[in-house]
Length: 249
Image 1 (tube, rainbow, N blue to C red):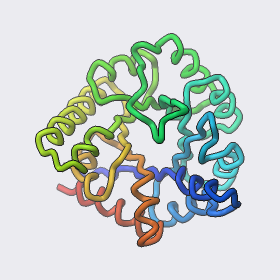
Image 2: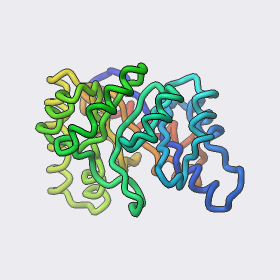
Image 3: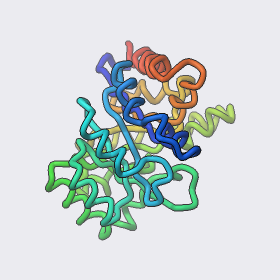
Image 4: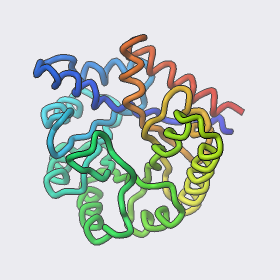
């Protein structure tokens, strides 16, 4: 365990999902982002999908205009999204795989097979001062591929770990946690900054938050779901507290 403060990025996509379900102007994702900031968020994440199913272009522009903390722009590695990112200039761009039929991001980027596709887009974003991260599977070989591509940050996909936690499968949970630990250690040794996220809840976040190499967690759905019962500010404070407890020696 470590006493270093770990950053919490709050993903506000599903505030926009609720808004879009009725075609109304509310709830406003920017208002949610500002509430999260007041409650202790260190960054705000928003995923502009090709089909604009939740976050819209106007949301990205409004977030950039109103936020005083870093904006992490999740995006597919397409020419359209690279152009929007370069025009918006968020603090960071996290490249994620995207399929129109999926409900949420399924798995990490294939950065080994897609090297030729990714490399020029990473260079273009970096040239405009945007910090690029890659959403990837927690495997040592993937860490090496990320370093070869020149991305300074990887975000480890924690979805399989969280599925094991929900299922109460202790053996699989231990296996997935060990995978994440090995990848985090290997990536950090290569000079990568290590982030993690996908599916984490207050109940499952502790062992991931405790890994000293992981500098940032990006969490969305669990916070928005819990906000229905306790409010968004309290949900963020509870997650922040769970992360801090895990980091204490």
